[in-house]
Structures are given as C-alpha cells and as structure tokens.
Image (cartoon, rainbow, N blue to C red; front, top):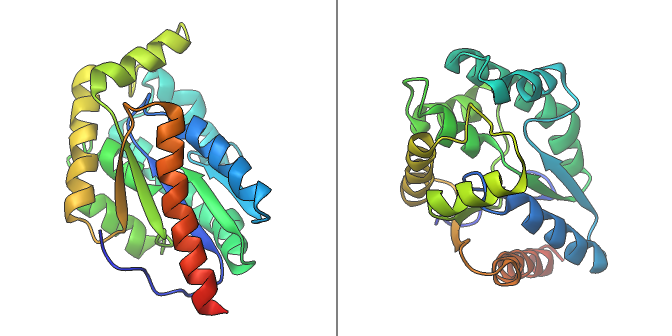
Length: 219
C-alpha cells in the first residue's frame, strides 16, 4: 500500500474490487447508507455503466460470451472514458465521495486472463490513454474461487459464460492479489470470507479514518 495521493480535486474516490461473489455490491450498498447518514454527499457508480452505449453493449453481449477479448477490452475502456468525463470527474470536482463497484483494476484483473496483455499493461493503458483518476483507496474483497462461485450460482439460475468459470476466476483472483502487492495504487485487501457485517465494518473504518484525516488537514 502506498502513501496517499496528491489531491487535484476536493472529492474522494473509493473503489471496491474482487472476483464474482466477493460481495462488492452488497458492501457498497451498506457503505453508501452509512456515509450518507453521516452527511457525506455520496455518488454511487459501477462499471460497466448502464448509460453509455459501450457499457450497454458489454452488458448485453458479454454474459453470453459474444465478445472477443480485444473487443471487450476496447469497450470497457470506451465506457470508462465516458464514465470519467460524465460522472467521475464532475463528482470529484464537486467535492463528493465517489463509491465505485469495480473500476479499471477489474479490467486489469479480468482482461489480463484473455487478451495476452499483463495487468500492468492494462492499468497503464487506463492511466495514460484516458487519464483515469486514481482512487484514494482500492479495496480488494478477497475470497476463494469456490466460495465466490457458490454465492453467485446459488443466487440465480443462469451462469455468466464469460466470467463465471473456475479456471479463469482463479487467474483473476491471483491477478488481484499480485496487483495489491506490486502496483502503485493504495490497496487494502479484505478477507471477504468473513460475515458481511465484519467486511463492511473493515471497509468503513478505513474510509472513515481516511476522510477524517484528510478533511481535518484541508480545514
């Protein structure tokens, strides 16, 4: 985990990452509620978006495995560029707390298993080609693949043919863990096998401490 980033805007960006079934969406829901109750202006975002035409295409075609690895990577980056310009940067410039369910680290973890590019190359592409803002903290909710798949496949009947495969998710999990140790971002790895309350408490404590420290320093 690296030191805190330089602050080019008054807002904050926190990202939750992890393999399918790690609990990202549920944790985001509860963290959003807790921050809002403490009078923070929270903007909740997720990727791929449901608003840009590229995000819609990913959501429609990716689950059935209709996209080639390169097509998928290109669509994710175009969707993210739209999200940055239209949602992320305006919110950060307005001083809001942006809470994201996946960001470009997910693209690095997942697409590195299929495109022939390393996660390092994919993260660099996002940072340099579309100037993706760096999060204040990247939370990696870590869970064994078997447990993640069990949660996902047990919650709905139809499997995502593109992502919900044991061998691929094993590579994705390893990529996330490697990323957390060797990338320049500010990572916190959270044991997602614990109860949802324990996971939420861990994430929230890190966010609250970070916000309290930085708001105090800026004032």
